[in-house]
Amino acid sequence: MKVLILTIAIITALGLVLSIVLFLVAKKFRVEEDPRIDEVEKVMPGANCGGCGFAGCRAFAESAVKAPDLDSHFCPVGGNDVMAKVAAILGFEVKAKAPMVAVVRCNGTCANRPKVNEYDGFATCKVKATLYSGDTACAYGCLGCGDCVAACQFGALRMNPETGLPEVDETKCTACGACVKACPKAIIELRNKGPRGMREYVSCVNKDKGPAAKKACSAACIGCGICVKTCTHEAIVLENNVAYIDYGKCKLCRECEAMCPTGAIHGINFPKPLDKEAVKARIQARQQKAREENNKEA
Image (cartoon, rainbow, N blue to C red; front, side):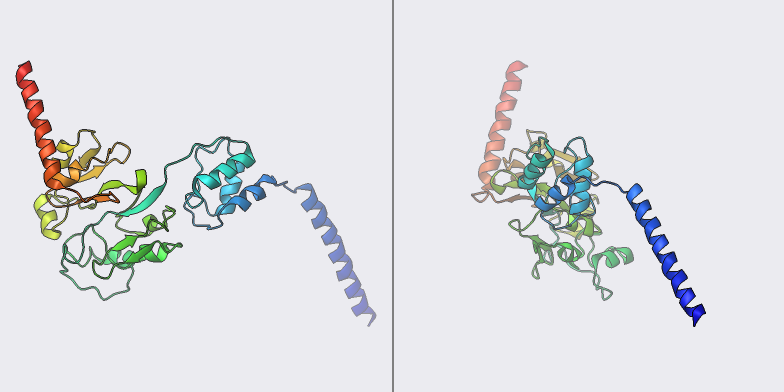
């Protein structure tokens, strides 16, 4: 009995000694946390989506507090309002950024891109992409399993059963980039919303040459370069047989959209439908005027 009591006493004493040692060590090596981290975290949206490039809102707050400025920090979910609050807490100035939205750069609807294969495996784009190029002849387009929809925390994406493509609800999209990361084909891009939501983009990423791209999808970009020649603002480049519109240079004149022979260029949220013939007439008149001026100079 005495042995048992002695054993318990020794263990208790040892526990107390170790507790005191741990307390002293923790006190000595304690790292004081900047209270502003908590303040910044409180004004964050709490989505923890990773769209800012950090593991979550807490990680963003810690990095922002330690940073010399906020040039490399932006919360896509909270936007400019949240960043203004963060800047006020930290005593920084921050420039407002143009709102962005996810854009699906694939025009391969069921009608434009008929199936040539039938996939009956695990229904995710990631798995499907590792196994083969897809159900259609286009090896670059949407795989249609909806990984982007599953990745979106804000309900901004849905699969259209008629087209087989994902659709973005821009009123819900926060431009967090989760869908961009989830797409193994890299067909989703974050672009500026544009003035009053108006924007132009090439809805295709097919890098095959014209005949092959057109055979795979009737609405594919065929790399003809007509849009590049038409644009007077140098907003369009042609690389790897596919055109790309720089939204920073685009003036929304819609001339490229009118001249595209396959309809691969899309205009969104314009107040009026595109009058292709009127736009083509305007282009022809401008080109004729340029030729006349060149003749005079010659």
